[in-house]
Image 1 (cartoon, rainbow, N blue to C red):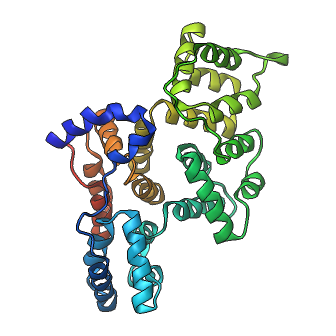
Image 2 (image 1 turned 30 degrees about the vertical axis):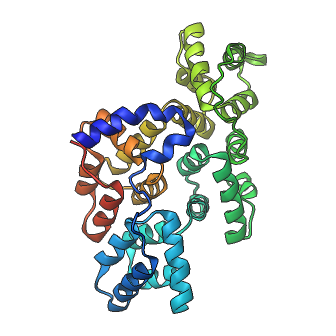
Length: 337
C-alpha cells in the first residue's frame, strides 16, 4: 500500500517531461560491478542450466549498465553476449533478455522492422512507437534503423502503408514536436481548436491540418485544445475523428489522442488487451515492459490498477509461466495492493 501511495502522490510529475524517468521500475544498480556480472553470466551460459542467474543479473541493471556489461563481456571473453544468450535461451524468454541487452533505439528499430515484415503490417505497433518516443529518441531510432537494416525507416513506412495514414506516421517519425514551455497561448489554443472543427469543400476535414497540429504541438497544449474543442462544439475530439476519418488513419489519430491525453493509461489499456481473452500478445507485452521499464512503468501500473481493479503484476502472473514469467515480473517489480 505504501508503494502505491508514493506512486499516486508522484503522478503530478507526469506533466513535466523531464520527470518521467523518475517513474520507472528499473533504476541503475547502486553497487554496480560489471566484472562480477560478466562472470556470473559466463558461468550461467556455460552451464546451460542456471537460467535464473541470467534473468536476475540482466533485469536488475539499467540499460546503460547492461551495455557496459556487454562491452566488458566482449573485451574479456572475445564473445558477443547477445549471441551467447541466444544459444543459452529460447522462445519468449530469449526475446525478453535479448531485447533488454539492446539499446532502446536498437530495440525500437527492431520492433518497427518486425511490424512491417512479411505480408501484413502491424499498424498498432507502428503508431505506438512513433507516437510515444521523444524527438531525440526518434532521431536515434532512424539512425539505428539505417545502420541495422541498410534502409531508411521513412521509405519502408511509405511502401508499407497508405495515405493519409502514411503522412501521419512520417510526420511523427520526423520528431518535430514542440516542447512544453509552461506558457499557455490562449490564442493558439482557440486557433487550433477552430481548425480541427472546420470542414472544407464537400463537407470534409483536412487530414493534412489534423496531422500538422497533432504531431507538431506539445502534449500540454493539445490537451487544452481538446478541452476547448469540447466546450466549443459539445463533441469530444474522438467523436469528431470517428466522424471525419476512416480506416488506419482514423485508428492512428485515435491512438495519438489517447497518448496525448494520458500516456500511462494508453499503455495500461494496451497491456490489458494484450492479455485479454484466450491468447496473449507476447510481443506487445514484452515490448511495453522493456521500453517503459526505465520511463513510466510505475505510472502504468497505477493506471492499470485503477481502471481494471487488479494489478499488472497479478495479470502477468496469471497469463505467463516459467522463466518467461519470472523475467516479466522482475521488470514489473512489485504487486500493487
